[in-house]
Amino acid sequence: MTETSVPVGPESQLRPNDAPETSATVAPVVVCEKLSKNYGGFQALADCDLHVNAGDIFGLLGPNGAGKTTLIRSLLGYLQISGGKASVCGADPRIDPVRVRQNVSYLPGDARLPRHLRGDGVLRFFADIHPRGDLARSRKIADALELDTRRHVGMMSTGMRQKLALAVVLAPATELLILDEPTANLDPTVRGTVLELVAQAHREGRTVMFSSHVLSEIEDTCNRVAFLRRGRMALELQMAELFQRHRVWADLPAGESFDQPAVAASIPAAFRKRIKITQVDSVTSGGAASVRIDTAGDLAPMLPWITSLGLHRMRIEPLGLRAIYDSVHHDTLEDPRDHELSPDDEIADHISSGVSV
Ligand SMILES: Nc1ncnc2c1ncn2[C@@H]1O[C@H](COP(=O)(O)OP(=O)(O)OP(=O)(O)O)[C@@H](O)[C@H]1O
View 1 (tube, rainbow, N blue to C red):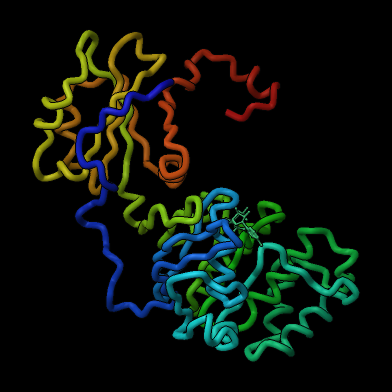
View 2 (view 1 turned 45 degrees about the horizontal axis):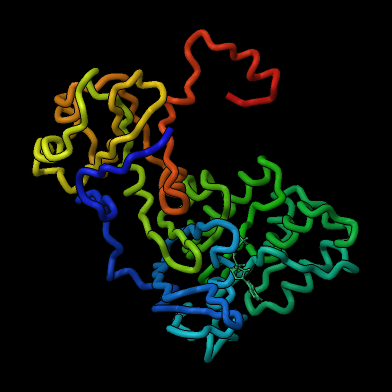
């Protein structure tokens, strides 16, 4: 399917008028203003603005190389920033990185642990050196993750070492928890346990910031999310706002063409700013013009107007992070109806060839 971009409605980001704004009264735990980081001549972060508020579970998304780790390591003072400023738990990571790290538990994406120690020795070592270390809690978390801490680190699998690192990092009761891909290398059951531990940390009043490539994890866990793209903050979103976004795929009546000004004029003023229509070419529409309608905010009052367009083959879906991610990073949104199976399609063939349907 190809897409002819004929948007009707606002070009800017759709925002439902009832979406909660970031409250200025909630204390920010992380603040970045025009944060930039260069590696030699390469700019890995450019003018990043970010607010993570107390009590947030904040998701950081972006494709490989977008700058997530660079941002996290700049916030912790492990990297010298090239421009702008940052504050983490009230401290400037350039001036007082030690104070920052006293208030933050950080799980690096490539956690390195002493290979010669047994698991329990590692837990004890980190509980001793962290000002808020808590060995009993570390052991409890290791148990919850079903990790055998009698093993030497050098004899552990990648997933076991990830569990051990999580038991080290999740235990100290710091104000802020920063996790760089916490569920990498873990099986689906353990992933669920890790997300439950993250939710528990949040219930205990801690602020959490984590990066992941698994969109469903971010969708299920976070209340706010930011998308990094080539070192720039491409979009910040409240999850409550996302859950109020929908996408309608439909065909115009046969023989009718897409009359952009007429359609634009027909949108009721009450939600004109919350609707965007794009004409798409669908291979399954049998020659009829197809449209995609993106909506933000309560869908119910918009339905009479959508019905008045006399559309066919309509399909409504929650927008979801996947669609937002694609639109931010690739802008290749496909009409899913082009890939649908007909009711009589040979599902058995798909299963036997290993394609999940
Ligand atoms: N030490 C370094 N020297 C030079 N370039 C670097 C260095 N570290 C990272 N980069 C580059 O900076 C960019 C951002 O890297 P970063 O590791 O922050 O991305 P990321 O979003 O965390 O990626 P991933 O999802 O793959 O972990 C990449 O282009 C990377 O090649």
